[in-house]
Amino acid sequence: MPVELSEIRSSSEVVTGQSCRKCGYSLDGLRAGQRCPECGTPILVPARENRYADNLTHSPMWYLLLVTIGTVAMAVTLVGSFVFSVYVQYRSASWTSLPPWLVATGAITFAVTWLVGVFLVTWKRPVSRLTVPDAMLDSVRNRNATRAAQLIYGTAIVLRFFATSSQIAAVETAASVFEYLSLFALAPLCLYLGGLSDWAGDTGGGGRLRSAAWAFVVAGVGLVLFRVLLELPVSFKMFLFAGYLLSLVILLAGIILFVVSVLGLSVTATWAVQNASEAREREARIAVRKQEQMEKDLREAERRTAEAAQERAAFEQQAAAGSPDIRMPSAARPSGERVITPSNTDGYALEPEDNEPRP
Image 1 (tube, rainbow, N blue to C red):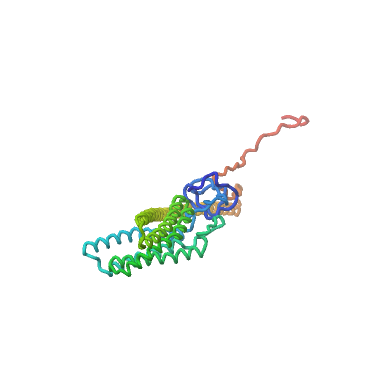
Image 2: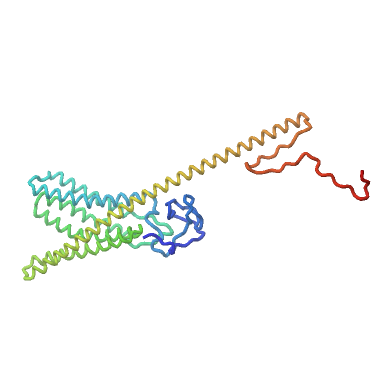
């Protein structure tokens, strides 16, 4: 959600970690109330109490790159693992199964890509004095717990691929157990990514991710509970089966919310990197123009100094030669300055006093 003008204030304090709201130019070192050197937009400082006073897009380039690479890796894993799993099952059903080593390589690749993506996304964010504290994003314990929980999800990916290719009952059971556990492991990741989306100004994405966290927890509890009850000799299995199907629907909704939100966060991070790169290019162009102007002013000053030195040398030569009509050279003046020079006339003759004889 963008910062509204009514939520921001202007003052004389120095701006830190803020970009122009119109062109994205870095305003570090300038003061509130001044104007953006690039586009002339007034500089306004967000209010401290505003939740969106700071933004992910104001972060340093290195952090934006980490978030971008991490979210893209997670998005690729989500989409790629689903497509690859469907392809493996299709080849198995058509009696042309893929080689086990290829299935294992794909499973391990997706698992490692997922873990690397989560590790990069949960990197400690850079903060400034305007950064609003966040219990999820700024907690070392929460970030480490989120990372550790994803080992369960990575293990579930590997076991599922092995179970699909080997058809071994023990591997199938282990894959199912880790898949159920991974639903609960995805909940803290959804909460962390929700806070990251809020920091990026995407409150809709943050809400979807928190809804996905609840969906994973509710679906995980429902699937485990109804699966166990269905194994018991009870007479109301139809109701239990309906509950199991409802849990699957909730799980599907959570997966869709999670995938869409991760894709949206990756797009936001990519845009932030592009915007920061353009801002750096603008800063470089402005620095080049300033340098060229300084060099031009320096050359002009050297030219005026040289002309003044030549005039003084000519005066000294005339004075040494005893020339009666010599004039002291004037000091070097800035170009464009108008100077009134004295006239060579004798001026106006004064009328004589009354007691003086008139000619």
